[in-house]
Amino acid sequence: MEADPTDIRPEDIAVCADCGWPVEAPLQEASRHTVAEGTVVYTRCACGRVRVWLEPCGGGGPRLVVGGNSVMYAPKAECHAGP
Image (cartoon, rainbow, N blue to C red):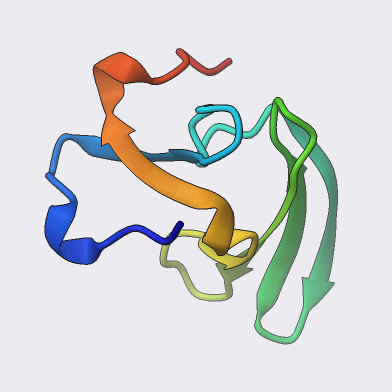
């Protein structure tokens, strides 16, 4: 189920739809590779789901490019604490 942007509150955080682990605090970084646009980072969630991030050249925060359809938003108090 994709998140409805109109339902997201500022205090909500992105969590894995399968296990509730915070998406921006992956359990493991599997690998990283330099590409023309920046650095591609493969991460693994606590439930084993793999997500792919792009850390762009020249700044800006990482952008989730693969695995975003398995994300939902929840109040921080209802999520796992993360690492």
